[in-house]
Image (tube, rainbow, N blue to C red):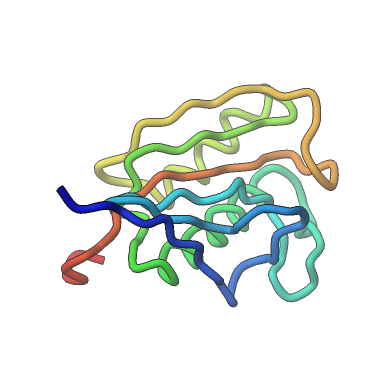
Length: 136
């Protein structure tokens, strides 16, 4: 039986970690991303606007991370969405549907008491590694 090694990924086109954690790690056939806020990778600040803009940026950050780790949004099998206010669910959901239009992954959405940088949304993902590099 083969032993799988944990891999830590360095991603240049996504916001840097704001703590002692990795942006993404891999183990076996999976990529695990850290939670992504609506942070602009160039400025390191939350994007201007509200829940829709932050959701769009968080998902764009996930897309960049997955691309750098030999995966893609199409390979995402599970996401977790953390909302500062569950009243933002319909607007977040509409933006989320733009990124996951078909074969949507399983998802959990929860309201939390607070998020880093006073963000409105944070999203993490588990994705399949694209070993054949032919589907993303």
